[in-house]
Length: 141
Image (tube, rainbow, N blue to C red; front, side, top):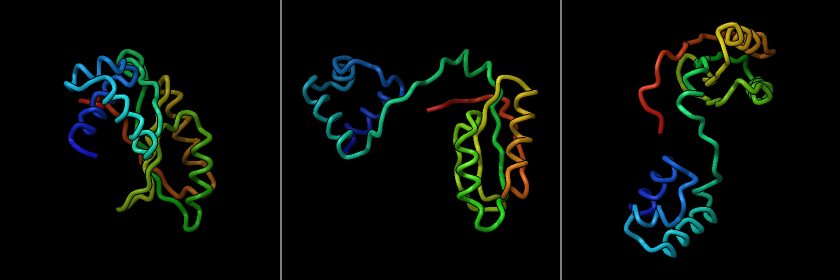
């Protein structure tokens, strides 16, 4: 990885569907060079795939929250498995500090968010939850 790879990855984060020719122009490289770098980054596992990024309007229409979880000893794998099956749970991270995990969740409205948080809190192995609703996203890379 070098600075050009970092710049290429930054461009792809902005628009993963950008044509190679557009990326090459933006980086001042040849199309062949960009294709070669992309192939190398994919082969090495730096680029694991490409994903859909929702529009700002769609994201703004959803309620987002972070749910901090305290998990019973030796129950992390079971809780992780259960949370992975919930479509409203977008990301789960283990963390240090007073909580064991943080889940990034989303729902269409407050009622669905309330039900999702209750469902998470009711999982076998979850001792306690603490939730914070996202009021605004200042930026998202």
